[in-house]
Length: 111
Image (cartoon, rainbow, N blue to C red):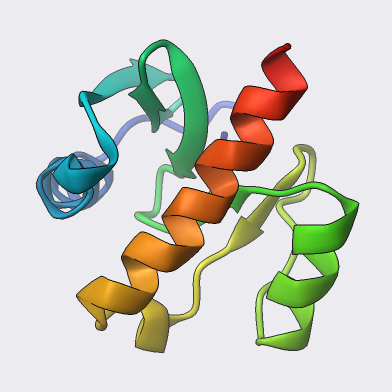
């Protein structure tokens, strides 16, 4: 999820733990350490990643990618995920809205 060979950091773990709490309203949100970062899942569907540096990225499709980019996000180097701007992370209602869209995209991609 981070650079090749990146190792999970305390920062990434702390960010992921906080996001699990912040996004509990989406359902049974859980986290799993993977590839030097952490994936957040709801009912087995990964919709958010935290990279080894603590950067937060949400799953996107063509429609949400364009919207996220227009609002200041940048694409993850290797995956269909877009960064979450700091102002969104600081606003629980806005974060919940963005995460809901990402979860919908992730569910659709899994089906």
